[in-house]
Length: 291
Image (cartoon, rainbow, N blue to C red; front, side, top):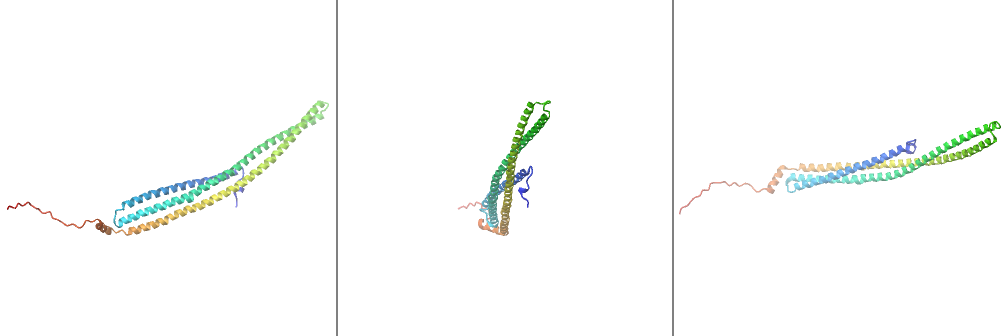
């Protein structure tokens, strides 16, 4: 199976790996924010539903009969549902959101430390590469100058006694010796810069290998953690459904017990003032009795 340390090379290899790992971290952070919002929504819903349950309980406090009892059962069901959503909000926040945030913060610190080491070695490699190129250029220049003076020296010796004097030959020979010394010095500096650059390149290569291995470990841990958290999220959601079904079954049972005629009789017995006894309004005239 292929690994990061063998798959991200070339001019932009590590940058692509850096982007990949960063995108994974950003994704985890965004999911944590989204689930935090979900948790807050669940908590807000639970509070408002609990308020409604209190209102229903208050409204049915003085009501009588099976219908009122059913509405009291509805109030209890609302309270139960509110508690379920409150537990869901708490579970999401504690088991998923906080865990994701801890994962992101911890991996972010490690990733920055790894990137710092690679950036430092990359800068050192660039600096030594530039020094090597500069030393190479100087070495080539000194070699060319030395070759040029050698040719002039040979030509001057072959022309001795004609156009060139011994003084000119000695002067040219001194220049050639100095050029040769400069060439030897430049070659040595170039060789030294090559050795240093190669040493730094090996350090950089080692840093890339180590960073790639660490990044793969981070990514594997992140993905495994995300899998675990998805399962926890699914568990919290799956609990909600069956409990809501149980609550609904209990409500249906209460509804089935509603007895409208019985409620009428209960109302009569509890609040009734008795049957009607008719009293006719008969005329009652004033009668004057004379003694």
